[in-house]
Image 1 (cartoon, rainbow, N blue to C red):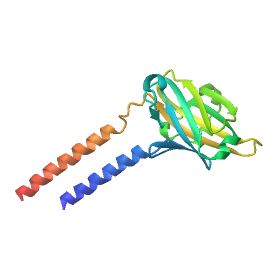
Image 2 (cartoon, helix red, strand yellow):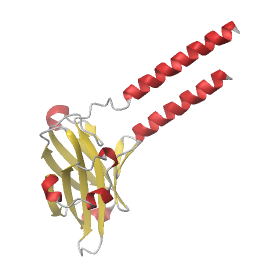
Image 3 (cartoon, helix red, strand yellow):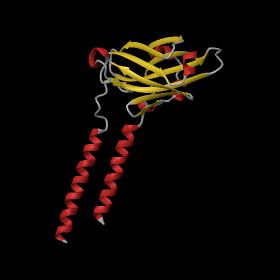
Image 4 (cartoon, rainbow, N blue to C red):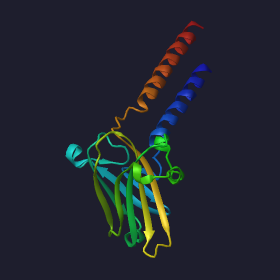
Length: 195
């Protein structure tokens, strides 16, 4: 009976850890080996490159170091090619980090003062790309605004990301869960032998 409870608990912990890892930040969703950016009802493939330090390696959200970054957005919907696309990167100041959403951005009084990169609205056919040099690690928020040429419809995507992300955020929890599970299994097997 005890063994069944331990196995159930271990499975629950594993599922929680994997679910947390699979979650995207904000409007960004990892799907297989690509990242999908949701801009209202519109979608685009989104990737970031650090060409000087990581060559052609693609990053979905978090970046391992402060470096020159190339953001690339390939439209999944043709209507994005007929829209004005605006791209902004700001320092994340709400304290919500990966949980920052559009409503948090709307509460900021002076967006310009925390803007690190801004590319005014422009129309790009099929692929939108920009380059930005990150000078320091930390939490940032990407904001993509897509407006129809008639300016009567606006769609926004907000995606927080970390620059200088080492990938160890959840590993201490995983290591602890494995150690806890191993201890429980060891003591449970000893208890069964002595009974």
